[in-house]
Image 1 (tube, helix red, strand yellow):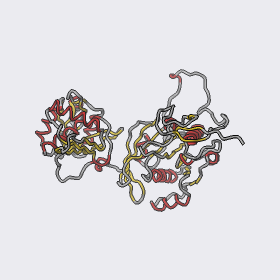
Image 2: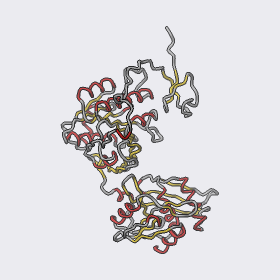
Image 3: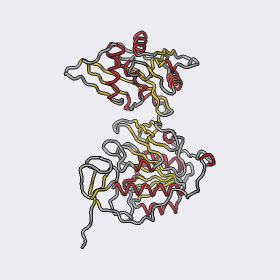
Image 4: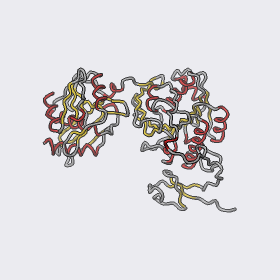
Length: 454
């Protein structure tokens, strides 16, 4: 009997090697090669996503906005860019137990109640378990159809027969194709099943929502090509011990990226939060030293987030710099700017920084709020409760403008804030009722303005 030939497949990029190596020769990742067998299959399963057409001029191609339909969950529609698109493929990732299946089950229930033909296919739970969850969250969906299936060919056959408008696959890691000999969840199976579902969605106009597992680093498990195949990639964020969940759009071919949806986990499932700024602001009776309110922009939504700083005398030779929810490397840079251009030294102080509510802020518009919070903690004087701040700080100490400054100011005024320290370039042309705007050009000017207010 001939010996079965084995190869080693990279679990990160899908590349193969004839022998085991510590580093993948394709993507240079370490310790990702696992033993497997080469796939032997025909190429007849490959097909184009659209009918071949002759060359066309770009100006001659008719481009129309694709019709969308609502999921029935307002915050979910916001993240998707306005709703689902026929033939679109959405990949939703997140930690175990964070609420991915619950959110999709609620969305399908709303769509089925609206008269749409939808199908929920689960490879991780039985139909009875899905029914128990629906009962637990008091979900009324008599028309919602449920399927427990992990074989790709059977699922494609059911799609062709039933022709649902929306199909949920929970999860893509549980599907397997009989054409391939590797186990479900392997790189080859995940990549092939996702590609086949995408082809079926594009050719039939069925919208497919796929749930993806994540690794311990928080990235989607499987090859990176999975994110390139689909149209939209969404990530569930938040602590499983907290009642709040964030759904963030990382990629969207049919809408804007970096959109944010805020949900609260209740006994009856996930509910959208109408005023998310309220959960990112601490409920102090009076403002405390080291706290500053920032207006950040998440996609098209301005959010008010409280930035907290604690500066304390260091008791070790190397003072600690710790940032939660903000970039730690940027904190070190801002402390150097504060010392050089404002004369405030922190070389012998521990500096701790936190964004309230577990939100992650990546935009540089938080720079000015971070520095004012640090200065407030050093002086041990609280900033005014009605003050909001935003602005990017450059290495030369200048305050640079931020995008959508007008929307940020209007959101702050709507929530009752009366004073704003902002970059001079963001000064609104028309006065916003009830809001006093203080424009600044340099970091020392901003610190002086904040000191006068406090």
